[in-house]
Length: 584
Image 1 (cartoon, rainbow, N blue to C red):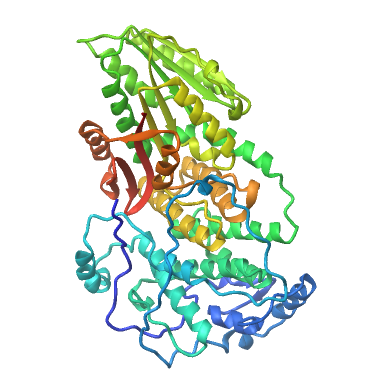
Image 2: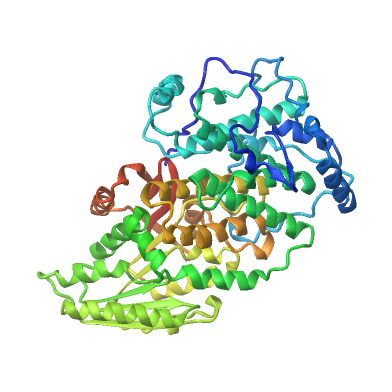
């Protein structure tokens, strides 16, 4: 798949305006009973004396915090960016962070021991800055079209009432932060990014959003540098504006700020939660998808239906001549995806089937499997289709065996793996065992749906940026497709997105159980087991496009071909991948 980067629009002239918080209500800027004026980020660094300061002890941190609280109003506002000197753009050679997929991508990545307290904090790495400025996007436009569009985009936005897309809010914040970070490095000149943009062309709410994300990026850098007292100040400023019930940027920033707080707590020994308990709660709440919030999301958000209809179409095409069909689903959830298949097979008048058997394999919430079984049984019976449902419950997937599944010699077997393989990235022994058992079963087709994102990087900053862009697409999607006050939206964002963000950002090692890798990495992994990728049929593509047309916001979704697979995204950001596999 060719990803075309959609950047904020380039401008012919860059205005050296300061970064500062604008337009917030004064009632929001009250800390410990002291009302403060709006403050720019560099003032915050200056008053803390941390532009190039070494890391400090916890006792020093507490002392610094106490002193900072006693600063007068003038101390907060007297230091600003030196914006009078502008240097021309100099080419910077940056090594790409993208490497060919390796088997190690599936191994738990434990960070190396942190730097000693005698080392000076390191700035945002060049690789992270490159990732921030050139984050890949799905786009149908060529680079030439993008350049011509970028030249007039700022003026166009000023001339209409359309709000700046969330993706561009993040990109503008990233550009501003790149300029800010480079200025901090040399202390003299302002780095002019190729896509540099001034905030003067944005409305008040957009300016607030850009500056809020800018604060978030600054906080992430200080967390990475273990400058926790300064990071806490930046996070506090984020939380003055961030909200779990506000606009998409405020909601996104709320959960990322909370995640950074938790990372600080973990690093300083103040974290008391049990990750295993949180993991179990997370699985029970969302993984099976049988709760009302998940089903409502399924109806209003197009991603899952596009994946399911295209996947079911592929299965139908591969079992059309079979009399007995056996589907093995490793993440059946509510089983709503099989309603479509049951209906399609029941209407197959020219060659009726004798039996449809579904085997649900899982390791949690066995009682929900039974609810799904009853639902599918009732629906199949109403259509006169012979149907059976088996449950294979294993306490640990490393104990899953071929004998666990009741397979008859006259059955045609298909395997469905939707968003399940990623849950085993932390335990490669389970993943390897699963693939070996599936190979021994010998299915006619394997349908794999996964999250199309890289949330498995050992670099905290790179992982933070990737995760920020990925989840921004979801929050933007929910804003377009659901009411802000929807209880279902609150549940999905708070439990599903919120917990995912907190785990990816805050945890490391075995505690970080939320991991995703992109389709190219899965391809390398599947090749180890003698699997070959099949082309997604025209009928499957047709089903995917047909589903999108049924959603009011379907035009905001992107369907792109990646090799032989399908990538579905939201306004240019990849969300899910669908690929079809067979064993040699």
